[in-house]
Image (tube, rainbow, N blue to C red; front, side, top):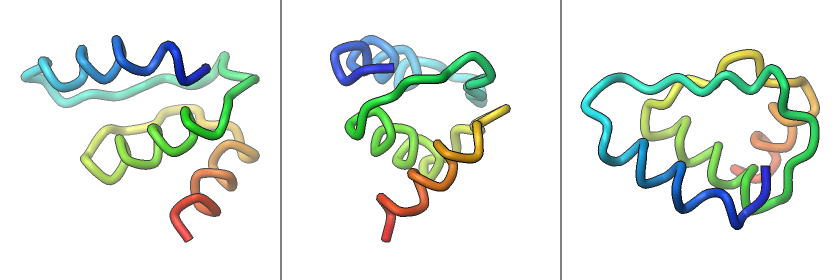
Length: 64
């Protein structure tokens, strides 16, 4: 997941009237902007499913 892909995902989340859950099971590579984006999504109520431990840890460090 790279920063250049975030605008479309952000738009879809914003326009959805349903509760959003992102399944991150197949996510192996991610950049810092995407990590920050996922952290913000989670704060706003988006559920992050199957998030790898290293990404979960990185999200926590970015919030600090």
